[in-house]
Each structure stands twice: as C-alpha cells, then as structure tokens.
Image (tube, rainbow, N blue to C red; front, top):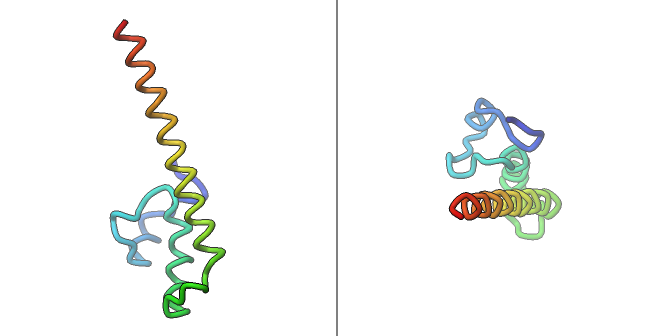
Length: 80
C-alpha cells in the first residue's frame, strides 16, 4: 500500500537512500536530503522539510503503537 509519503523503489535507488531509511516517510526524506546537501548541512536551514519529515515519523510511530496495542488486546481476549 503506497501513500503520498512513500517513494517508489526507483526514486529511492536514484537518490541513494539507505535501506534503513526506506519507510513510510521516505518521500519526505528525499527533498530533505537534497536541501541538506545544497545548504552544506547548516542546522538552521531546511527547518520546514525537517519538521514535516519528523512529524511523519512521529505519526507513523503512533500508528504502529496503536496497532500493537490492538494486537495485544486481541491476543489477551483470545487467551481468556
């Protein structure tokens, strides 16, 4: 299931995104890395791109934790 925040494998390969970073927010990481390279990784540059990427990462974390808690609850109910 691809969303608007997930880049295709060809895009990821073309932009040399490491395997560990190819997640649900990979499409937001590509412009962030481009901006970082263009501005020589200055910390006060690319704040908007970084904020959007980190928000995506947080939302993905919350989604996975909710799914895990539902899974644990279902397993506990099944065990009873």
